[in-house]
Each structure stands twice: as structure tokens, then as C-alpha cells.
Amino acid sequence: MGTTGCTDLMMLLHRTAHALETELTARLADIGLSPRARCVLSSALDAGLTQTEIADMVDIDKTTMVVTMDALESAGYAERKPSPTDRRARVVVVTESGREIVAKADDVYSDVVGSVLGSLPDDERSGLVSGLTRLVEGRLSTPVPCEKPPRKRALRHAVS
Image (cartoon, rainbow, N blue to C red; front, side):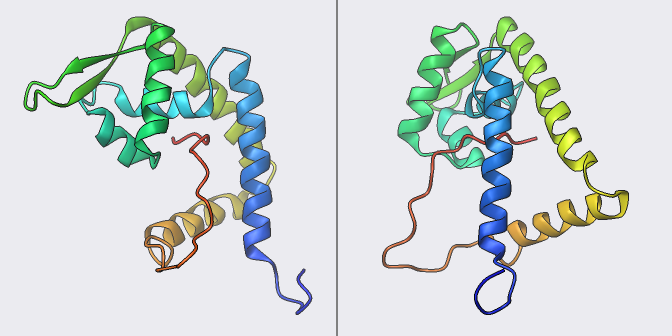
């Protein structure tokens, strides 16, 4: 509760996101993957998308995307191949070992999210998810102009 007696929504969302991100990071580390890498691999599966398209989709900056792709290529999970429609662009292709690791990561993600949502009463689960989805897709979908916006952290959460 804030000093005005109102719920501090930002703090609740921040603490929830941080705790979930920390748990996912720890659990995915057990299989040698980060939430960001899982997110990129999952988004790239059979999508035929360029690095830039994936970065835009998962909301990470281009530099972070390049670093993430470098790590995924080094691990043998993904490759950058020339786009058939734009020779300047690179399409992200998930390798067979990438498919295997993303399947394991998706299982970890499902376990963690299932456990988190399972800790809520049945009648609160769908309401929470649908309410947050409506906010992200509606009222909070476009950031307001701000002279000094808060620093946006690099994506480390997992997208389902």
C-alpha cells in the first residue's frame, strides 16, 4: 500500500515480474539457456523471420539481438542465413539441436508458469492473465511521450 492507501500497481507488477524472471532464469540455466535465448528461438521456429523482425517482435534492441544470436550460433542452436527476399537481411533458422533445447526450455517455462498460476485460486487465474493482456494490448500499448523515460531493460522474460 502506498502512503495514499492506494495499491501500488507498479511495484506489484515489478516485484511479480522480477520474481518470475528470476525463477525462469534459474530454471533455464539448468539446461544452459537464458529466457532471452528461449524467447528468440521460440519466435524463430519455422517463422522465416529476420533478426530485425524477431527483435521487434520480442521487444529487444538490435545490439542485444546480435549478441543473443552470436551466442545461439556458437552453441549450435541457430544460424543466420541470407533472406531470399532481401540480400541485406539475415533470416534466423533454428537448428535441430536448437529445436531440442527450445522444446526442453518450453517444458521448463510451462512448469514454472503453471506452478505460478496454479498458486492462485481457479477464479483468479484467467482474470489475471486476461486483465494484463488487455492492459498491454490496450491502455498501456503505446508509451506516452516522456523527456527522460525509464531505462528499458533488455528482454530476459519468456514469451509463450
